[in-house]
Length: 365
Image 1 (cartoon, rainbow, N blue to C red):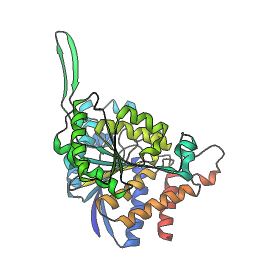
Image 2 (cartoon, rainbow, N blue to C red):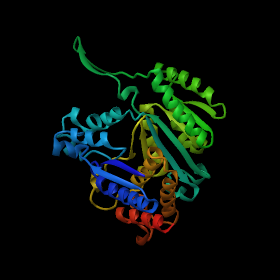
Image 3 (cartoon, helix red, strand yellow):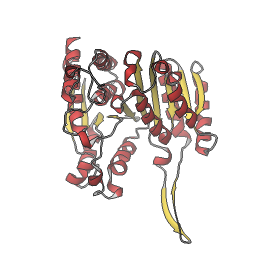
Image 4 (spheres, rainbow, N blue to C red):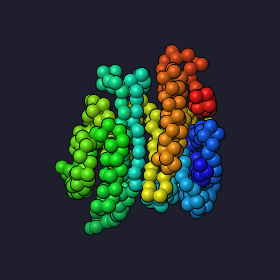
């Protein structure tokens, strides 16, 4: 297989964890006879300072020509971010336009913690049980984040409005993605919403429950988002399977799930559209540790595995990366964010050291 990949390394720790992801990608390519041509392009806060835009036109063209996109986290220190005008900051001027440009409506975020690694979680062993295995599927290009933003003043009273809109097509397509994923897994799906308050959630539910008629084998439950947040802490394993979420609620609950795992460094993600997708770590750019070679590259390497699976259909290659990632942690190796007091220094891996271990396992197996 020969594919073109746009690489947007981003800011902070983005470049150093991206190097490790590409190192693993090259090892897979050599082992299985693939060819991946990577083109790097500026993206994020650093791109604003170097090119005058967080998502420069040249980067858009590189992404247009690519078969898939690898994106690192974006954002610099608070002081540096304050130098960027609000409309030009990467959250608004880069991330949302990237999603909109390629209609990447389906966000996959796996929440996986095998029983052998339950020590990572702040939850008790009896709560984690035999392990957590949830695929959170978040609608990514609709809802309040993409709705109209209004700020104004009436009779000396300032106000602001953020409008949340979902149409039938938006909900129908993400529901099908979620039910199909449930069919691939354990045939369980929890639909998360706020239908007791929000009209958009009531509409969302009506469409999701129409779609579920096409998947009678799926064990379907419906749950309010506030209760879902509570239940994720009380008994996360009850959600083992698929959780379907709208955009803003999904943004919040997926980060909460990262807390359950003990680190956002264990959360890769894939953002898929009809014709193209991009993959990215679910965490931020951590500018305070950038360049120190201590960042956890798991999420970026896992995102590369997601690209092989979701963008290119290379399931065996993706599985080999997932197995290597799990194998390293089960063997007792840790990155700085996961290391516990008293752990031998030889078991604590640097960013580069972790990437090298993954490559070593892929080459050896």
